[in-house]
Length: 259
Image (cartoon, rainbow, N blue to C red):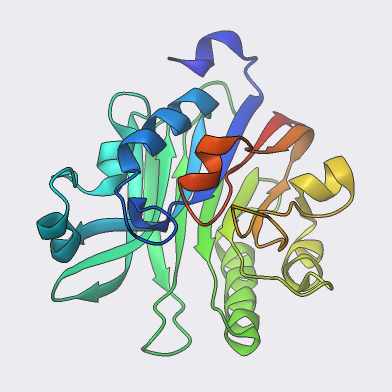
């Protein structure tokens, strides 16, 4: 599978998905193997993942089919040639965080700690990606923001500051992930995206961010794909029985054209 062969030089397909550490909604079954097949079927060039387990000794003992390698490596396999993993939460039994899977070389990456308190570890995983034929690298930031409004507000401010400091004004930019921004006012759009001249893929396509949580009956608009320097051609929430049971979130995809 190689989407590079059937897309124009300026076209990308992007996906974001909170994978719930590769477990079913109520943590009863390991679903990471089916999830890998589903992600491959999306044919995305870039995948932004949240709640990725680098190591989890408890689940490995409890489930005989728990992957031996870190989940981002297991999912990337032979499809996404490069990947970055930002370890956020660490304890004696393992760690988890965010990951970016890429069909293109990742030039450099950094994970910035933006935890609002010690009981909820969060990070901004920022990668620069070299795409053949593009005049400058693509900047990608994978996020999973706090559950509290105060924590999210601080993290949105630090995210905005990072973009202003680290990303050239005319460089293509994608910021995606689980924003936990469930209020009807969509704070992330107004406080982070608009000041940076970014727009959300589903707002461009349908007027509002997508309903992505909970997966059995999506009501809340938690997951987002914000872009700058692109035109959104299409944006979709992944539906069907398989996606309802592979996490407590739905996966989002969008097709972008560089402008």
